[in-house]
Image (cartoon, rainbow, N blue to C red; front, top):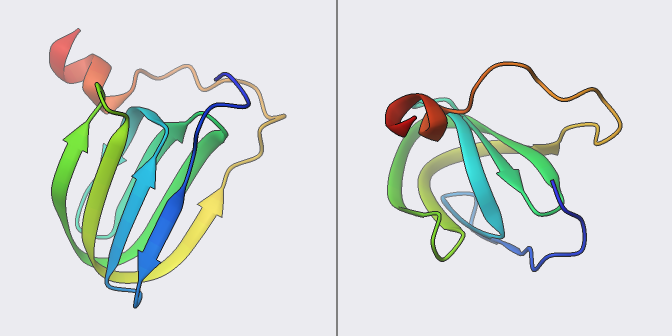
Length: 91
């Protein structure tokens, strides 16, 4: 992941999150989302997630649901060897 790219998070009432600077997605289900951003891996946990938008061209994702936590993974950790969700779907 490259550092220094445009990356923003907008959280609206713990019910809607908009993230910019999204470069890839590792997983998405109704309780957890993991995306790779220009500032590292980002994990979003909660319940009843629905993806309103995912665009890797504009590097945006919008998710609605009950958001419990937003966690950046350790950027110094070794790269994960498994392929991302987008790579598995379109690779």
